[in-house]
Length: 80
Image 1: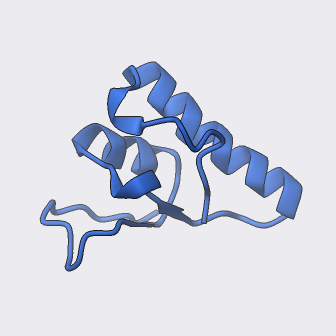
Image 2 (image 1 turned 90 degrees about the vertical axis):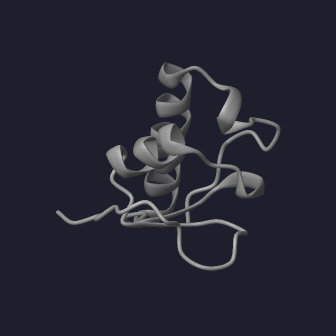
């Protein structure tokens, strides 16, 4: 799972540009260091909204986890 580079970074308050950079760069750093394709994401502190979910999908993640129980209600299909 990709982790945000800065644990103090709260995705919900970032600009859209910074949000996308944070999500994409975290994935890239882990893939380079580990030599594997990172396919899943864990929302830091369980924080997410529509923008965050879209940024995670756009970055190429196949699934994402939160601390919420149950399924996220948004109809979203992560297929390639």
